[in-house]
Amino acid sequence: MKALPVSVVLLAALITAGCGGEPVDEPAAAAAAPQVTETSAPPSETATPTPTPVPITIEEAGSAYLALVAPSNALADQAQAAVAAEDWAQLRVVAAQLAAADRAFADGLLAAEWPPGAQSAVDSLVAELAGDIQGNLAVAASTTDEELSLAFERFSTPGTSAQQLRMILGLDNVSVG
Image 1 (cartoon, one colour):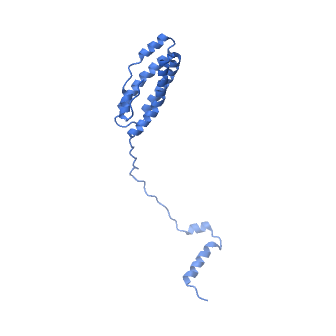
Image 2: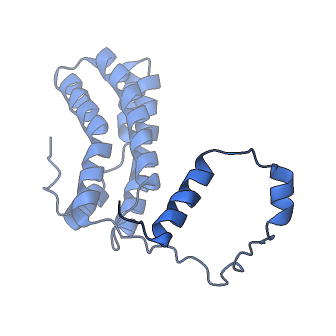
Image 3: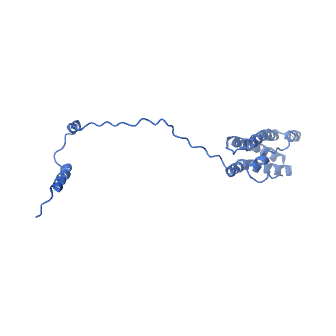
């Protein structure tokens, strides 16, 4: 039989001592163990840098504009169809819906992020929409042909801000009629 080196015997004794034997009195063991206090490093005096926002691209802004204007455009087509058919009752209904859609469009324009150079066209378009909303509300509220005719007269010449904004955003021209 070959003798084991002393280091192997001691290692085996230490391993088996941890696996069984007499229970250790934990409070006594804790009192006998050296006390170590942890200290944390002082908080950093340099602030965490905030990321620089990436401006919206022309393409993203164009897509946002088209999504915002779509409901108003669909209702404007319905209003034009009602005028072509001389269906004044339908026109009044659509005009009320168009006033609400234009308000939502204007609110969306105001809330959206726009690339540099587009904000003045957005502001002009919102101002034009305010006039259109008032005109559509007057059409919707009309009860006689005379009131309807007066409401039409309140509409100003269509503005150019939508076309200007579309040009800035690289979109196709506004369709007419």
